[in-house]
Length: 331
Image 1 (cartoon, rainbow, N blue to C red):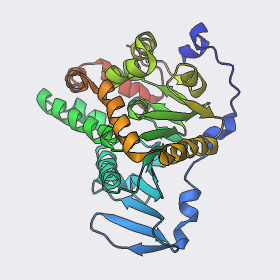
Image 2 (image 1 turned 90 degrees about the horizontal axis):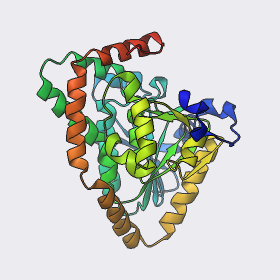
Image 3 (image 1 turned 180 degrees about the vertical axis):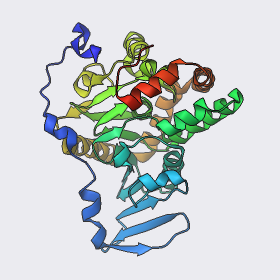
Image 4 (image 1 turned 90 degrees about the vertical axis):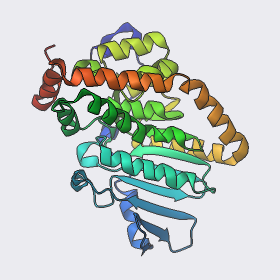
């Protein structure tokens, strides 16, 4: 992107580019399956290791036709190891594109964690080579074809709420940004309490290039995380930055040159948080979020209304077509 050549974006970090194609979970999730015993449940499949209940994996199964593109495990995988819960966005073939079905499963994972008093901290990451490449093109096309503006406003607010449910967790959540975080994927990472990421990954609020107003709290939280000027630069240009640059600008707390290193650092931090007083940690995270969330609901309504206006305009049609044709949009 043009941001890479900007003097404001100088970056001296060394990046191992081969790490971009690695997966945090593609091996480790698969390798444990033969060790587990399957139990049935109404909305999830529960897997426990043979040693007891200290570790379990829950595959939250969606019902939409969109789930056919995901791995058989479901669009979201919830793994609990002692006091640490890990939520994995699990649609690697589509770079973990955010869909309504995935949002439903994420909300279920949040509810599962909130109902487990043993969990003290959570991690959010993505399967495959991306954290999340952003919104689903089919979903955008459906919004463009919707003739009732008010319905799009309602649909977008519900879409935001599904993914921003992570801010309703009673415990802190760390984003282990294992690869690209683009558009709505960047918003999801930004909604987490702490972020650790892959230094070579591409990250950005690319809405302006697509031809649509930022959504999912980007216009509200980006300035709080990055500062007003940096947020304005990224939101108004749609430029991306590397994880190394995101670290320099404060979007990331820490980073690694490998996806394995990202998860390792996230787990180490989660372990330190889990060792602290749970009452203190849970009260403190509410206080920190409350400060960020002042005015958030008004911002979400503004975003949904503006995006609804954009869906009826020409710019987003050009932006979507450019994505399909893999070219630069001509706005």
